[in-house]
Image 1 (cartoon, rainbow, N blue to C red):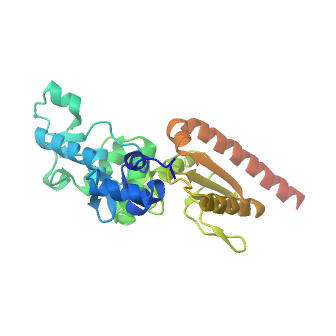
Image 2 (cartoon, rainbow, N blue to C red):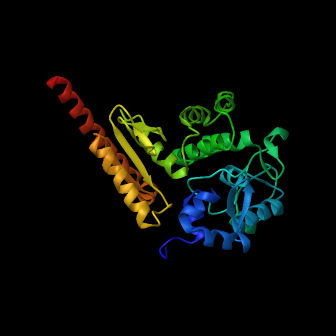
Image 3 (tube, rainbow, N blue to C red):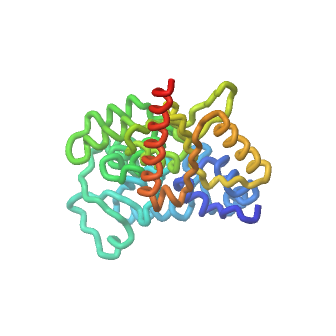
Length: 299
């Protein structure tokens, strides 16, 4: 267990916020308990933890500017996980507000005059937060926020209504991302991998599907049932033990033996080499489609 990551490193990789169980899987119970007792991490929602340092810094900067937390900072403050955590707190200030050069360096700020119902205390409202993220963030980040909002309790019908009524720059994009959002996504890493899949023609993946072929084989991260492709996001929740490694190896072998193609992608590749991941997926889809066509001809 000595090679397990420290709690803050794991927390960042898990999206900036994480359920206690995910942190324990990544770092071990002893490390998580010590971080909680020492005030290194703190709860932002029931059962959800974040970095105390980043949490306090974001709120302090917003208070100093008489601004509100927005975009990913507002999402994190709500206990929503994100794909990439902001380097500086993201805030919104009124258009007329003067911001000193010192404060400009401390935050990433946007000038907008918010309506009363766009603000929820020290942060943007849930509707405003998700809409801002879907309008402006890169596709993987936006999808991760939308998935997180659904996991946190926002209904799909409400998310679609929020984006349907949106107007102006990014509104159409927000509607497209909302239509792809899925509360079954386990974490932002999986959401980011699915975002890449959505840009690959003929690949149609669904998160967290139980596969029975004919007996229960497992519940992979992403599944294309037509092409019989399984995608696993090899996440920060490391195997941690010999037993877990053996269990995963047996599970992957069972998929392959039943005719499924298993692809495993690391966090590093999805984060830093998404184009390479997309190329791999396109090649696999092409090959699987050709094999299916040959099978039909042979039959």
